[in-house]
Image (cartoon, rainbow, N blue to C red; front, side):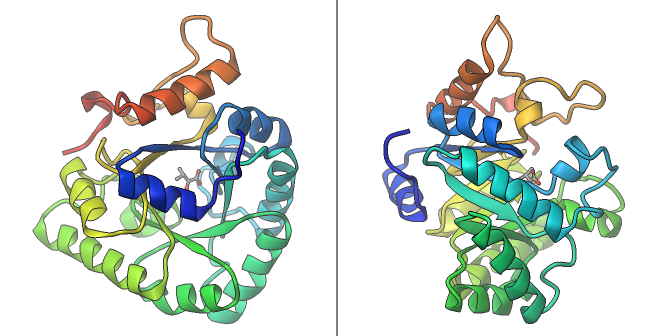
Length: 265
Ligand code: KIV
């Protein structure tokens, strides 16, 4: 990748109607392959609790785990925007949020990601005032799996859809720089993406979002146990891992991924 991607780049891409790609990364080698393949963003996801550590959810992941993997990814990054997840209960109040965001930013993140809606507006403001851009993850937020009673599509029905739109508007006003929308009906994701000038990355949210993200191992077809409907194996046809990353980025940019079979209504 030639130039370093920033949030400014993503905003420009959104305004021109250009799609961008994002993959999770957990170590330096993955980061090097993903960024060299031209994938615009990398997310050090707390999904590492499940795919690296073997837990059943993301809840056991600590800020020390996230800081370690963020530092590994930062050392391998060749120019992608690097987002790092704030783990479960690491941003329940402003003091905790600032302390934990400091750890991730000093490890090399360019932005931190928090899961939740309008109730996080004051935390987003405080982070921003302290030089930390925030990405907000809405819809199916895996840290709330016990509230949802499982990994289920969120935002179905008029009232839930309206709540999500209001959350997005309040978070944008508070200074959110990026949104991730997970497992929501594709029509709702399209409305949300239109309603905000902030770039929106989707996962299981249909083709209309500004960007798409997949977990690295899902993109390589390694999730064979219970693959969710929204994933696709890009490592088929004798491709190398680098080629698979490029194919993912290509298909996102050209609107070929996600296809109808990866979406929810
Ligand atoms: O933790 C993670 O990998 C994520 C993505 C699935 C969006 O939050």
